[in-house]
Image (tube, rainbow, N blue to C red; front, side, top):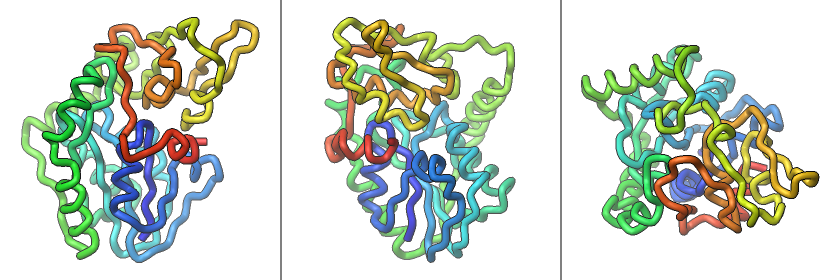
Length: 264
């Protein structure tokens, strides 16, 4: 079994590790230009952004060639997964991939503009994450055919988000819950920044560089709004306008070293 995963704070790496098999980082595969995979089972594990599949992941899924009789998708979310399942099915249909299994796992919501990380961590146990993952793992091991159902409201909310993403006149806003905008217009690097370079190594798209001239860091124009930089900053120096708290989150089962290895 091969799992293609994307992680920013460790949630999806933890899910991928729990499911087992050969783990391949999507950012690494993109950088190494590896887009064809063969195995008895091949799956994608990634977070839901704006109750839909992130554009970065959508582009990758459409590009890869999978030689497998069992293709699955596991998506993580914090509050509402919308009709992300339908979106993934559509992406598969458009790119010739027939998903046998799609499910979601509810975890800590690490979307900083909308949630207080301290409160999210304190309530993490209520989500019964281990039980959810165990059920998904059992399903995949048994080659279960299953597509999570969505309701009419889910479809309406996700379709609205997808339409907003395509609107060239939509005002950029982290609070608009629209992925792909990028955090550069909303980020501020405090003087506590030590130029350690961790943010440059956790960024999956190599969008950050150490700015020696100004003694801080500089963000480029290719941000995918994953928040890996601000969530993993050792000095907690990357602030966002409107953030609910100064607390940050990393999955307790995943180390910073693992996230760097996944994205660098």
